[in-house]
Image (cartoon, rainbow, N blue to C red; front, side, top):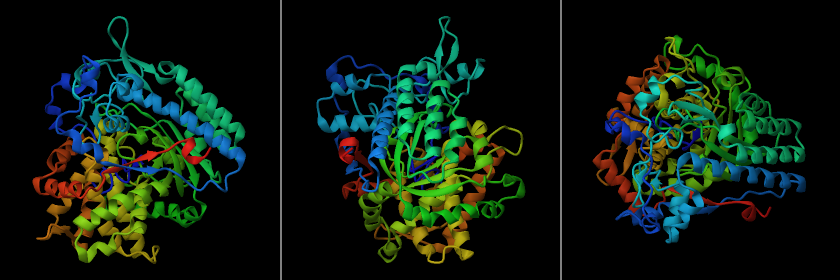
Length: 566
């Protein structure tokens, strides 16, 4: 799972968010749910901005994505260049999964530079941080199934059909010559691109000075050609000392808002921050004890987190595909494969330079507008970093398989699973911090910092919009906290945290989410989203104040080999 997109996920807990189709959204007709975007009738239509949308074009702040590469050898710099080139292919593939039109021809129709940049970061004509609202004339609603399913397919047809790899992560659903639904493996559908990416990964492996990293790259290259990603996931978990890393391939399922089955292509190229990583290493060992202490009955915490989980800090030097679309991920918890998680745990990657950019340009300015003056000193980068970090740690807690034989949590909750998992990680991350602080394992921690920064983080993430796994989850968290009295809104329009009540709300929300997951309670999750996953008038007005203050919603990276001097 990715944080923001990322730190952020259900935000039910506050940092991330729920995604997926709520009952309210399901009031759309089946045809609307799966309709393909209507092709514009002319080049002029494709370049025409929807009336009133001009104000949205400035919601991103452009930041150079750089890192200190002075300690990287010449050979490893060559390797980094290869990894960036492979990542560029992932970017091309995600565009195909997200939107039916060719990227260059689509962007070529747009004459205004700001509109073109906005379309580029959104990978099509839909505003990802505002509920996938159409911003170019000539287009209809974004298909919930993106390009993973036929445009004329209904949910009912899919659910009644019986075909191989129906719920597969690494295939797209198409129609055969007789009109029947079939799953086409990515390795076949994108053979040309994935073959080229595999070659680049093998060339990068030959340049690696770390044997385990070279092995991972080689196995990942093979996965591109076979759709068998689990062996490379295990190989990725085995790496401990590699100073350079890459997360690449079809990974997250957020783009499939119809069912949450299909994985989208993405990539991150990373350079490890050794000093920060050393600070984080000790926390992975706390997972088993934290699992036992979760505030739910025993049957919801019988699974044991893998013992090989670890935490590390990185500077990210390239984003591609899903991770680069709309809101940018600032932390990663992978692999998603349940078997790998149970046997080996997960790796948590904190993207420190991206976090720093968001804190400086977004979080701190938000606090100056919406957090009570008496509590603003409690919004700190260290608390932000730790909230994000423990969000990722919390993905390893809870339960992966339902307690009532409904299969995995991911299967039983379908398109709602990703958002709820992100919400779980958000709220459990905060819960973990409070537990570790009480145990004296965070000696310098001030819970006022974590709670207040968490509150500011809700305002940051809720601006990602209803279609975002982070935005919706944050809406749920905000409304749940409001009902529990975890904060008050002062007469001056600022928010003040009640630290005692926030701790109570954090615990009860943790219980609620863990129970919904363990029960595989699809209807319960859908009801929670419908009831609390909404922005009410007062909050909408307050968020508008952030826009009036010209505080960006997220960032765009000026990135690539040229920026890095490679």
